[in-house]
Image 1 (cartoon, rainbow, N blue to C red):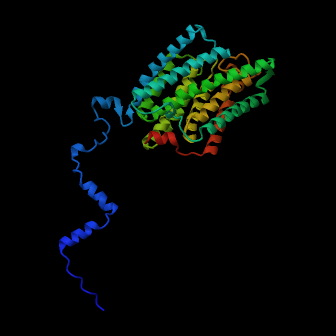
Image 2 (image 1 turned 90 degrees about the horizontal axis):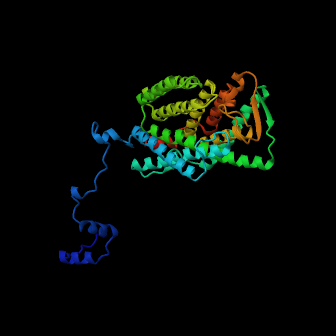
Image 3 (image 1 turned 30 degrees about the vertical axis):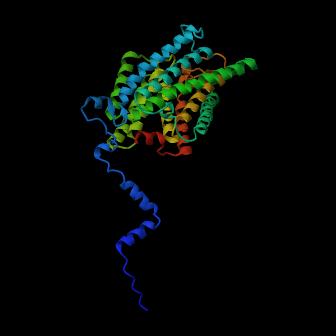
Length: 402
């Protein structure tokens, strides 16, 4: 059968019928949007502005990532010195420190390093505000996965690495170890005080070189700036520093030149990170030339372990492994084994160690860090870290290239 013809219905009746039907959500939304006037271009939200126009005054100070790295560091250094001076004056008037620091006693070293750490933290916080970014101190290479675990593993690795070095020196006849003879209560007191002191040392030196400087230079350094900084550094050492192992700094500068040049020419995504690593590592070695009793091996070792610490930032995603390693290494060297460190023998150690024989192997007044064997320990530490974590791109580099 064919369908029946539908009767003709007037249009007015159809409109009334449709208005009685329930309104769907899409139709209601369309009606609501139609009720508002069309937004004009003037009423649209402003689009984000790009980097300043090249050659303009804002461009001179601001780049694609905000305040340029060079200006950030130029502001950071004087603020750090000012804050450190204020903290030192406060401690002096509180009769907690004297006019001259005692770098051998745990008390003198504790307050000396505390002043430096306070200056670093205060300056980094102020510069972060000046840069106009909503950031905190943890964003300087202190944010990453498994921070507590990396800190604990780094601490264990630092103690194990220094113990391996001391054990090798002892087995080779280049080190003698004897008990300090202190009573147990004194040993426990010194263990805690030196532990707190070396933890502050780890936070200060890693916070300065592997956190603030590394993170800042990563986002704003290129090959020419890196070459210029290295040339100025070597020139200053040549003119103002006599002896104290400056050839260790020159050696690391030469070793890093070819890889950094290759990365820059290849325009590798990681070039900024490794150029910054080259600069911060040589600076870390250079600051140790002011210590007494240093030799070129000890200075080169300081610069080389600085590079290993930078590599740990890449491998683990933060500087926590390096902080733990640094603190544990210094604690084992200063307190547990009581070895010489840059010509100084600390007070209140668990054991007392003395170098013997050829200084090329024993390290002499520089201690285990001045022995050629330390270079093998540093290399093994780097290889072990790569095997444990894998050579992969991690958070700090991703943040720098975002």
